[in-house]
Every structure is written in structure tokens, then in C-alpha cells.
Length: 407
Image (tube, rainbow, N blue to C red):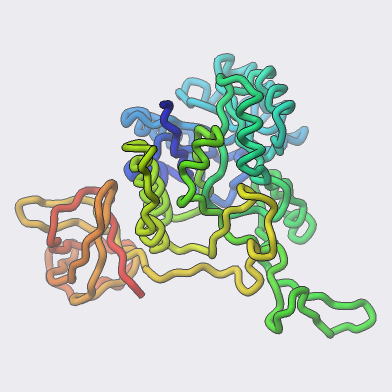
């Protein structure tokens, strides 16, 4: 049985490393240009080189997003940029524009291509066309059902890999091809500058009744008419695999390392449990509960089980549920003293109960009883952002373990 790939977002070098540590089989990232996520940290050329080396040393593949729709003025900068990165061993380029494919192929002849979801790949004829054009992998349109994906799998060569989003934000427009941001703010979503106007609050005003606002849905607070719930397929791992999807893609290059650790950790546990014994596999709701300790919206299964309904939209709010705060991340640990070096991410006090978790481990709870500043002086609180602390731990921890606290 070919084991599927868990593909994690890596908005910057720190997020790439966290994704790798918490169980990703592959990561995808963008450079400073051409990647449709200008709001993410993205990576400089030296950071890309360092990130690829870090991932490869741990057996993790690296995919680079270059899925911008190029305009005339992008052509020569793209060509020049590719010459800067051509020696880096990138495993696959995520692309949507034929011009970008052609230019990458000119500069990096042996490049592997993955067709971005931006290209709206929705049927087996188109899938075979792109494979004949040299595309190794298709990132399927989010609008496909499991039955449609199964038919695409049955009617395409096994040498063509299918990748699909299984978790994260859903775009109101067809596979991300949106003009709302451009129209309302002048920021082009198809060139990496989406302002997310689908999360704005809208009400209806009739031309001859200025100042009289009507909710589009029956709710006196107005409505978020474009605001989809987030996708979550954690409970449906066997059906995704049975449909022929070989790469489970997590959306979120702009998400925090706290979010990445929780989501990747949950899917890693579910996937690994499935492969232990596919026949007797049972979904564990505790994986979902643990994942939800990172900030999240309400969830939907999107289009996988058929067309969406009003139940898949959130008409009340675009805000996140945040029941836990990210308190700190471990930067070092002294096994002789049991003291961890911690970088503070939210303030904490002596006596606080925290939860401690790390890659491939179960979390545990403890109280903060001993806390020192960077010079080793006892302190009662840590109020300063990214303050370096020493905290006495009840159990051994390792670098990149995280501390959280229930609100």
C-alpha cells in the first residue's frame, strides 16, 4: 500500500521547521515573489536553501508555490528569480500559468510540476491533458466530490498524482479565482494580495431607501454572506484514501506555528493509526478536540459529500474560536536540572496551570512553580513578548515543544 503524503504549509522558515518536526511528509512554501501569498512571511533565497536542506535531512519533500498569474511585467523578473534558485533541490513547483511552466522548464529542465488548485482542475479529460503536458501532480479543485475524484483517479494514469485540500480556509470563489479583493481594495487576489473581503460584514441597501439596511439572511445582526466555514476532513481519512487522493494538503501559509503544530499533529496521528490496521481503523474524537485547542472557525466538509448548503456558511461571525492561548515554545532543556529554556508568546504567572505538548507525544498538565529570567533571577510573571525564561518542567521536554493555557 502506497502511504499518502501529509502536506503542510510553511509560510516562513520557522513554520517550515515546525511543520517538519510535528510530522509533515512534505511542505509547501513561497518565495518573496510569485506565490499568491504576499501576506505570508515567505522566504528569501538563503532561507529557501536552508529550509530545503533542513527538510531533506529529515526525509521531507519541499514544494515551492509559483502559482501567480503572470502579467507582462512579471516575465523577466520571474526568469531572473529562477536563475537565483535553480541550484536548490526543490522537489516540485506548484504552478497554474502555462507561461510560468514554460519559463521554469527553460531554466530548470528537470523540474517537477504540480498544477495549482487555481487552475480549476475538475475533470479527467483536463487531468489527462495536463499530464500529457508534463504535469506530475494535480491539486484538485475544492469543488469536487469524492465520487468525482474517484472517477478522475480511475480514468487517469497511475503516474499522475492527485493532491487535495483536506483542511483550512475555504474561498468563496471558484478555487480561489476571486475578483472581490481587486474590485473593493485594488489588491489582486490572483497575484498574491487578497484582502479577504469575503470575511467582511455585508448588508443590503435599496437605492431609493438610503440608510435603510436589510440583512441578506434573517438575522438582525446582518450576515456574512460569503463567509464559509473552514474545511475539516479529519474524521474521513479512509474515504479520502479510497477516492485515490495521495497527498492531503493543509491550507494555512499565513497561520501561526501554534496552529500548524496542532493541525499537523492531529492529522499525523489519524493517518498513522489508519496505516497500522486499515480494516479495523477507528476515528478517535480526541484528535479533533486536541486540534481545536488552536484558534479555528466552525468546520464543514466542503464539497466532498455533495453540494454545499447554507449550513456550510457562517452567517453570524467571521471571528475565530480561541479557547487556549499559546504561552511559550521550548528552545532548550537541561535534563540534569529539569529546567527548560522557553521563549514567551503570551504572559504567564507563577501558579498558572499550563499544558505541555510536543511532536508525537500526548500533552500533560502542570503548574508553573519555578520561573527564572534570562539571568537566572526568580520572577513571578513573564509579561514581555518573546521574553526568554527558565521554567521547571515536571517531565522531560525537547526543543519545539509548546506551552498553552486555557483561557
